[in-house]
Image 1 (cartoon, rainbow, N blue to C red):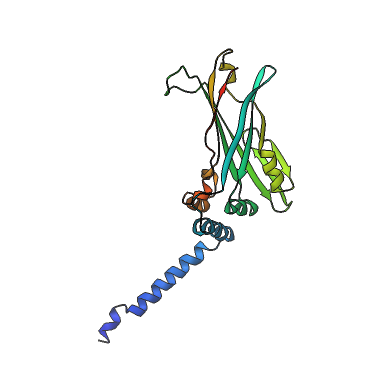
Image 2 (cartoon, rainbow, N blue to C red; image 1 turned 90 degrees about the vertical axis):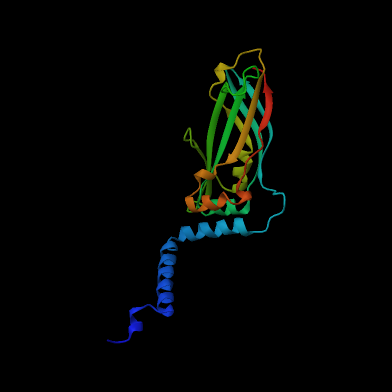
Amino acid sequence: MGNPAALWSTDSDRDERHGRILLRAYREAMRSKRLILLWLILLHGVLAPRAWSSPYGIFITSAAVMDAGDIKTLSADIDYRFNPSAINALEEGIPLTLLISLKIRDPERLWFQQPIVEDQRHIQLRYQPLAKSFQVADLGSGAVQNFASLATVLDTLSRLRGWKFMGQYALEKNKTYEAMLRFKLDIESLPLPLRLVAYLSPEWHLESEPYQWRVEP
């Protein structure tokens, strides 16, 4: 009848099978060079030691609604401080998208009513490895600018000028409104593997405090 023990898997057999399964799964997951790179960037951002207060973020230093003939435009000055993981991701070809949102409310309205003005812009930072240059693209208008270095990109982005925001014709003259401007890195636009860990890393949560001021058309 043979050896009855042969009908059952030994611990050694099970370990060997489990090892093969794990090895196969590992190889499949690691096939993509880009996936490996993303996880390295990710782990660096999560596991690196942090101070209690992070030096990274987006800081709005000033904002104003300006008259430009028959239209109004928004101007703002911003200080961008990206963490090293975000910069590494950008230089490896992963686009970073900034979400800019503007709201203008009538203080005489109830708090739950819609703002008079509510507009957004999506600005994407890209790196072109072959050309060794950076691009800034307005995803709404399709306009693209090219830059030789990241420093020139951030210097240009630090001065927002001439934003013809939607809804401005609803603003009445001789009336005071409350405006709020906010900038943030759009984590939802990141590739999925990087997005998952970016949610866990405070250094990836680059978002300005709401900048508020009064507007008198």
